[in-house]
Amino acid sequence: MPEDHYFTAAPASDGERRVLRVVLAGRELEVETAGGVFSPDHVDLGTRVLLRTVPAPPPAGDLVDLGCGWGPVALTLALESPGAQVWAVDVNERALDLVRRNARRHGLDNVTAVTPDAVPPELRPVAIWSNPPIRVGKAALHDLLRTWLARLAPDGEAHLVVQRNLGADSLQAWLRAELGLTADRVASAKGFRVLRVDGPVAG
Image (tube, rainbow, N blue to C red):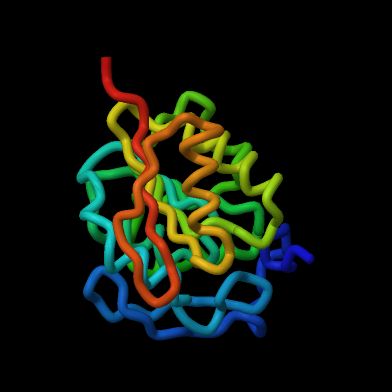
């Protein structure tokens, strides 16, 4: 059964929000979280594996955190690439409100937190980082990745972290066989795989 945090929820009230201390991009930060979003009490293990193993993000261009939750990946992208535009994308309005609050709290005016349909259709990200919502089901996950990976800029890259026992290897095979994409495992740690998916080669 898909989990509630994968779907829309109203922004948290003052009483529902709480402050969490985390380390992102090598800095200790205070962030706001709340119930009703993914991993509200800590940076989850998959996201930590992703952030430890991906290369530095491009310094400019559009960067996408797909399935942003309260924002650990989006905030990291914004801190590491202040000259880039970071798009934090989620269907959960509570999560998006928290990302906006956290970006404001740390002066990260290069973060835009929006639902998928609010992203400009012409946007071609140079990087997508994602801990994708595996538990929404295979069909919904495949639709999500088919849509977003097709939007990668020429020579752009996506990095996806997926738990091995939740289908990382079969997802890698699907990306290759069904979408015809280059999808390589670039890291494996603590039961998670990090897959790099290459965008179209520039002309």
